[in-house]
Length: 622
Image 1: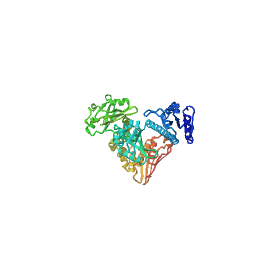
Image 2 (image 1 turned 135 degrees about the vertical axis):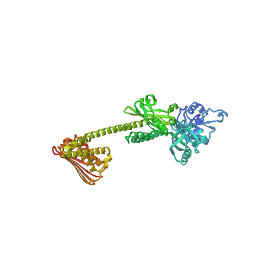
Image 3 (image 1 turned 120 degrees about the horizontal axis):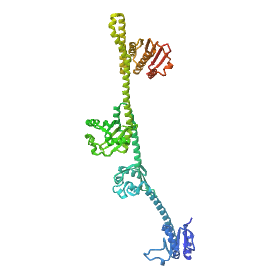
Image 4 (image 1 turned 30 degrees about the vertical axis):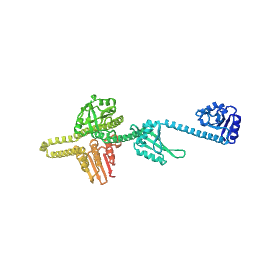
């Protein structure tokens, strides 16, 4: 499509212009001043036409970049303005009459070319303005440098983040001013010079000396001829992301430490060892210089463990102290609130009552050891650094204290259970001594007192009584040996199994009138757990014979080969219905459990009036 030229002015001048331009352009010749017409590319007017179009040209020029609508004025020399006077023609070119065709064409073409260049320039300026607005409005810091790495532009976000202006960056250069490690800046510039894009995380410095973790993306800037004219860098502050990553990383480490500590604390039931493990593991959860464990007794708290105090006298002094809870601010606060207490800065007066080594404490955090709504004690941590402990430390110490509370309670319950078990065992032994040994010895003493007189009256009867006395004392001795074996499980495991059976038989004979027989075949060592279980099964069986069977004879048989064993206890007593008794008998149930624990089979054969057989078979499968 041909460019459009508007001619306006006197008829004669217009005809001359049209004769020259018509073959090259589309001509418009309005008879009245036109409205703003976007189709027109250039306007050619004479002096009279310029006067008539003055207001229109002024509006047109004001509406656009002046050269975007070029005007060529054809006039005579007399109408030119005086030298130095600002023209009011609103024109872009002059053609002095008489008209030369070649000059007219050149001037028209030149104005059209200028118009196109102006439009391109304006479009580029518009784009630059848009880019500039985008750069200034973005939250990312942006810097532009020349090919030598000298800063030539930074946006407001850059100034806000790092505090530098362009000139300040160039005083020492970008690498020294901005980069914690200047070598990284050199690597970036080298990559850009090799037509590479650089992206990575760097640590940059602020004007005030702070450090900002930054995601940096750098690329070259090229002109229309693909020539590198500089580089642009986009800086994203990743401080929050790094803090989140660090928090998550620390949280994972904390959770792992807490799991490991929990496993360590619950790995023992001895209270003293639990307390030692609390102190040895708490450092994995919260760093500190010194630590204490307090347990509550009544209205006072006592330090039962301390760590980090090299002075033995300080340790002894601490553990000798009793603290009245109602008079101690920190302890009272932890009990009332149920949560940790932090003293970021310890008042020097706070240290006055303490030994010299404790006076180096500068900050403190404590947590209550709570369980089921009650406070059992306290964990105290100390640091020689002021303001060392934070709310995060307090939270972690509180979490650790909850695990410690469970471990301490388990150990205390275990200790009480052991004390109760010891008491119950003593009571059982007392009953055994009373029921068996004491009665046997009493019978023996009665016979012994009567023997001298009986010997004078009836020597034969006295001999029988003497034999009975011997049997009673042997039975009492065997009973005592059995009780001693139960008190020393290691002795029970070390004895020969047939000897253990013989002691049980002897003890039975000593306290009853039952005829007891022991038959053994083979004698091989047994695993400790197997021998112990078989001993107690036999003992329980013989006790049942004495208590329930009304038997006159019992036979214990042992057949032992290297890998197999069979044991039987057979009596001639009244018998019973196993189906009716086994489910309710604690003794029979325990016998079955003992057999099951060593992989043995236990069977009971009995009928009313037919006696009872207890059969145990075991095979070594190891």
